[in-house]
Image 1 (tube, rainbow, N blue to C red):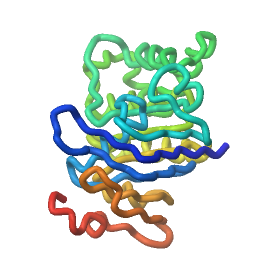
Image 2: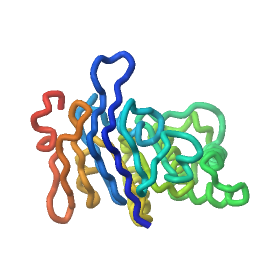
Image 3: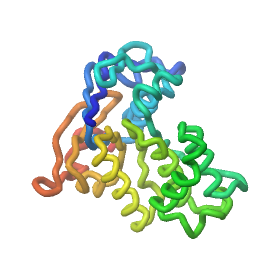
Image 4: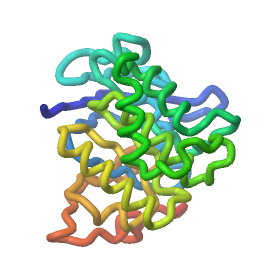
Length: 241
């Protein structure tokens, strides 16, 4: 099934700032991969948090498949099941990786009768079988991010938001991430992926959105088979890049 997420007249300002952090007149995201690039402070993480329902814009509307999308709450997840991996994802504690995935899957609504099977699938997809009984606080940063990705995929989201997910991942883990993205795309998921990695721009057919000072200033189609995207050229003219 294909999906469409539309944002109109979105404006968000943090309480301690005197000007808008994010100002989008119109943004339409359809099923497929959407890469959001820009310098630090350009508004990438703020945009993803608004789409995830974690920040409430002062103005604007969100529509999912033509229906009003609540900012947060149960109704939002029922209309647009969402996964979100934040940029600073870290874990502490003695809970085993397997138990943590099972708990996360339960929070995302996976039925109790399916938890064991689904959790085992997610652990395998993330390539974490050998450390599934290890405390989450003792996992490497890259393993923790893979664990987070597994949990956010537990409920087969229609909208997946990834805030620089490749940060801290070695090349094996990056391959796992690409496999996850490929699986999401095959299911018609809208994948919004912020990145500073040029390799991310040239792995899949995608729409690239360039952000500067809270606005999307460029949009273009990218295809690794046809045209290689150079990040420095996209950000040309942004003095903070």
